[in-house]
Length: 164
Image (tube, rainbow, N blue to C red; front, side, top):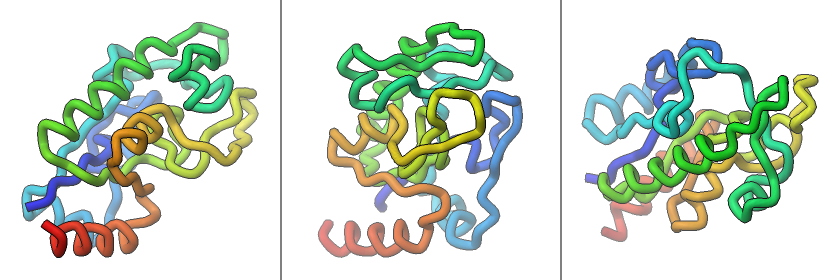
């Protein structure tokens, strides 16, 4: 059975920066959970950040952060890059341990964004780009979907299981 790494906030765990969850209320996610496929993971908490915590945004692209050039900062300027990078690496380890070849992550997050992240100005403005965990997983060959792409994820899962 193919496993799926999923942002813990999407399965109802209160791990977001504001102490909230963002559960996905979709039949597809419920089915995967009932089948025991879901591997919940929060890279930010696993990387050492508390709940709640100050919001953080990428100052640069995720790739530049991983190369040591960009940073992840809170609005007050605190550098939390190390926790984000550590959490991304731990997410990859968790996916590899579970044998997950796909992930469903929270759009917009500096860790988990798949298509959009906030622009680093703390103005509520997002820009095209991926989060650090998404980038680490994709570089390792794990396909990442946002919570808004469950039908595409289901198609990919069917294709994976057809190839296995």
